[in-house]
Image (cartoon, rainbow, N blue to C red; front, side, top):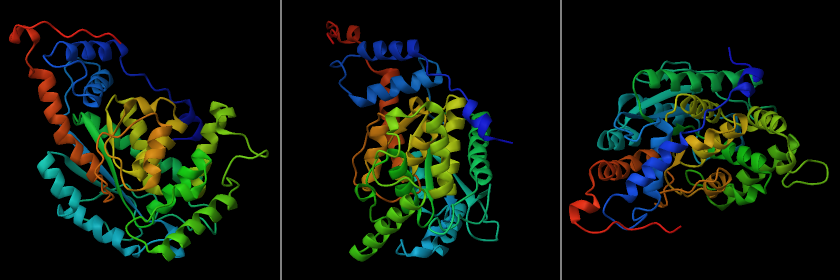
Length: 372
């Protein structure tokens, strides 16, 4: 059983720096301008370093979609009710959801997971890893206990290990749960110690009144648990905290304000890093979970591949904190891991070129020189 002590003692082996340099050198030997494919060259080199081979592969890949309900929906922060979570989970299990349709074209296996749907049924085609039937309303009490949060993290880690044993080379993160842009906004604001108004977005589609109500709810939650809106004299700034303080603070934030999907995705990121599997992140819930994972277990960020910019304002803020930049703009806000899934066909093209692109000798021209 995962305990706080065991979680905080985890160490992440960094990707292979020598393999990274070898992959960059291989790119420079392909007949094209230096860094001609820009960030895509870097991503291939990073994946090579993660996998520990100059011949990396992402041909067997999956998108894990963590499904969970959030008690904060009681406060009217979403356009729809929690019953939609169950309905979409059924569609995921039946293979007819958006993620499933895109996944077939992108050759990505879809792994829907019930980590905390508020229903008593076992949803056909959905992996049952339920911790509890949704979180509690964080305005009334903490969203989950530390035992529940740790169990969700552990189940995400174990799932990553199971997928590694089955030969998966890359894992995309996705989620489904009404109210989870509220929980992610609250968690992200607390982690970054920043004004939540710069993070709270419209989610699946709120009018101005709904957005105002959602922003107020997030502010109330932050104040209730002592996170405030900005650092002040009574609390340490983030850069002054010890590593141990940051870990404890991150776990407290998850328990007080988070969602079971965020907890499960954090565990998935940790498990993938342990197993040297690159994690392709989707939107703001995924990036919030990834930032949380890196706060709990430093070094996770080295295994993360951001996919798209997203429409939720917090996504770029989370990526900036992780020192990452998205590869796709897209203006997307669909969820279910769809942005991450859509990155794979682009990566396939680049990987094919990395493996088979003509060398300068094939052209009988001199190789470009790197001067930086």
